Image (tube, rainbow, N blue to C red):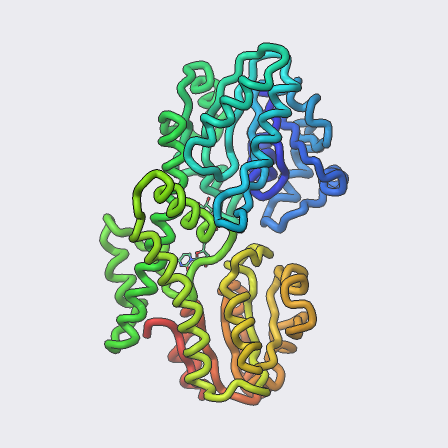
Length: 430
Ligand code: UDX
């Protein structure tokens, strides 16, 4: 089927590449010419494992192309996915001006029936608004069907998530659109939940907010474990063995970050408020998440006492492993607080170096290797659990570091082994 995807960010690019991989003809559109130029050379603007291989394979096969020619892409496609950014405004609400612009552009360019799929993360009722815009600016009197098809991709495993979805959610009131969407997703899954547009939009808000709640809940339990002498890892395991709870998203640590959870939870709180409901549970989820970072800095201080003038080595800056993304990463607050206390910070991340450079400038020393980072440090602070940190040679680290503190924000290292080697180890919730 001929499809267009507007916006080549994480969501748009993964959607476009994966849909072309199952045989659809996909045109990806962006207004950023340099991005499109790079994509045409097979260079991805985002770091996502496997994305460049997928782009190369499908571009070569003639099923995937990149262009800035919006009108032409709309004209030749039966279905148009809107995957442009919805960044938070100063007041925390999502800025939907890009979505509106795209809807308006589609209305103006289309000369025959189109199905318009809302893929960006948007507040409930955006589907209705898109419908209104399409009908309002419709010079060729075209019939438009609107679909909400929320994404549930995790950065770092987005291709895997897209290709093997737990479920696909399609919200629409049109039978034609339902059948077309079923056909698009058929090569991937037949496990599709059809709903009305508003319910599909709420499913996205509620799913992400529930996952964030799970993380804050386990972090709150971790705090109780710390105070009572229990071990959060045993507690989480015991809880997760209950099928009704499930073991995923029960890793205690420094809290959630990234571009989705903080933004989505905030948007759900606000939209509930706007509609007359005080979603107090979610406000507390946010409080616990914020407090977790503060408590972690306190833990570093209480271990090392004075931070002023001391070198601390941070391993991991991205908000989670397998991504270069540092948006709303816990590492930003934690490092800024260490700097405020007068510590000097060296840091290493396998992918987020460039983004970290933009955020911290010369305020921290960005290193090219784990061992360079740790040289002469008083403490090793782990903030992101990259797999390669599991292979650190701690005998070597002992020689390199001045101090013996290992403060682990993700309960990643083997506590017993480190203690045996003479390190002073602190995790979260144990
Ligand atoms: C999330 C959702 O999982 C995805 O479905 C949605 O579409 C977009 O938002 P993502 O932000 O890529 O995906 O990352 P995810 O793997 O969900 O992790 C989010 C944050 O929670 C990370 O900072 C991670 O470190 C943290 N986290 C996750 C925990 O602290 N503990 C956990 O047990 C799980």
